[in-house]
Image (cartoon, rainbow, N blue to C red; front, side, top):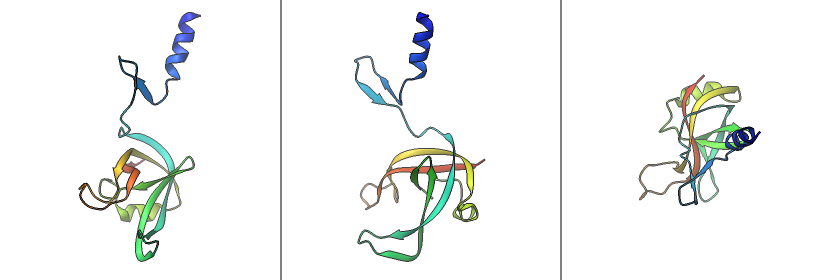
Length: 121
């Protein structure tokens, strides 16, 4: 019975670990995962709130959450994404946190969680 309780506790560990000192540390979130969701195309809006005609962002919507798709890091092309808009798909992806538009921290960019699509399954 004691082992059953221990095993159930280990299986319910949240997405963080405890280091030897006892403080919590976040586990890396850029590991590849298989996710089911839809690709949506959204009108790009500049920081002044003005929509830019002909410029679009892509988002992957999964479990009620929308992630910006980073086209520069993704293996899936924009042309492939256009064909899949609105369809329920399964992808191999990594969720990351950082700059959306550039790798250079000296260049202005949107920042936050985003997704990198590695493959459509």
